[in-house]
Image 1 (cartoon, rainbow, N blue to C red):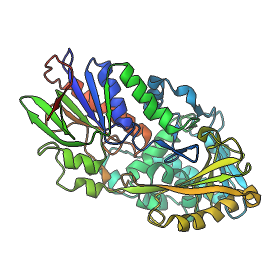
Image 2 (tube, one colour):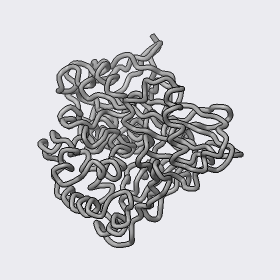
Image 3 (spheres, rainbow, N blue to C red):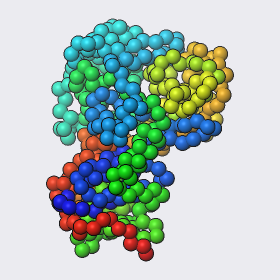
Image 4 (spheres, helix red, strand yellow):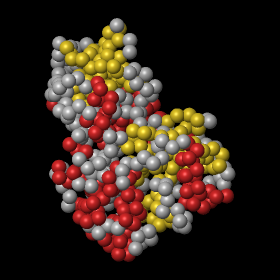
Length: 456
C-alpha cells in the first residue's frame, strides 16, 4: 500500500478479515469491513439460547499458535483464555470409563512425551514403541514437497508400523480435531504439519488453550470495538454482490450501493470467493472451490442437573465421541453443568435429524462420563457446521490459492488459502497477515480520501 490514506475494503469479518483489517489500520489505511452476517467472528461465534451463551463449535488453540495468540493480545482479550502450563490431555474410554493421561514432562522435545507415551494404557507396549518411532520419522518429512501432499497420512502411518488401534487411540485422537479428517483421508503434508508444529516442534508447542468466555465476546464483539475505536467502519448485514475494477480503483457492490476503494482483501468462504473473483484474478480452473471441498463438524450440547465432568475437557477412545468440554462458566449457567461434545469429520451425522444425533451420542456420553448416568438431562440440542473447513485430502495444496491475485490491489485471505496449515484459527489469522503483507509489497495508488459509500 502506498503512503497516505489508502482506502481498503475487507470483505468478510471472520478471523482472517479481522486480522487483515487491523493490519491495514496499523499500516495507516482507512478501512471498511463488510460482513454479510449480523456479527463479526465468522465460524467462531456464539448465540443466546434459553438464557445461555452457546458457542457454535468448540475451538482450542496451542501454544505454537503464535499468530492467533497475537490477535488475542491485539484485541485485548488474552485474559479471557486459559493456556496450560504443560500439555495434559485426559483420554477416557467409552468401554470402561477409565482415564489415561497424555501429559508432557519438562524434558526437551521429542523426549517430553516419552514418559506419557510409555504409560498410555490405550496402546499395547509394542504399539507405543512403534508410535514413538513414527513420530521421529514425521520430523524428517518435507511438508513443502508436492509429492508429500499427494500422499495420504494414513498410508504413511501404515507403512511405518501403525496399527488400526494406534490410528484410533493416538493419531486420529489428535489429527481429526485439527485436520477435520481421519488420517486415512488426509494429506500427509498437512498431517505432518500438525505433529511437527504442534507436538514435536518444541516441548511447550502443544500446550492447549481454550476460551473462558463466549466466542462472540472473545472474537466478534472485541474486534468490532477495537476496529471502530481505531477508525474503521464496520458494516454487518452487508452482503457483497460483485467486485469491479475501473480507473485504478475497486468498486465493491453491496445491497443498495457500492463502496469505492484502492485495495480489497477478500476474506470469505471459498465458494463465495470464487463467485466474487473477477476473471483473471487467480489461476485454478473454474470449479476449484468445489474441488477443495468441505468437511462438517457436529456438536452435541447437554445441560445436566449436576457436575458430571471434573476436567475442563477430555478426549475419547472406544466411543463415537471425540472431545468433550465443560462450558458451564462461559455459558453463564448458574446450576448444574453444561457439557459440549465436538465431533469433527462428521459426515455420518451432519444430515441426521436432531433426535437421531441425540440418540446416538447421548448414551455414548453416559458411557464416557459414568456420573452422567445418575444425572438428569435438563436440556440437549445439536449445532452443525456443514462447511466447517475445507477437506484436507491428498492433493489439496495444488488447489489452495495464495494471497496474491492477478489483479492489482486485490488479495485473498482465509484458512482455506495456501497458509501451509490446516483450516485452523491459526491458519485464518496467518492468512490475514499474509494478505496485507502482499498489498504492502505491491503498493496501490491512493486517492487521499477516506473510503466513501456511493448510494445507487
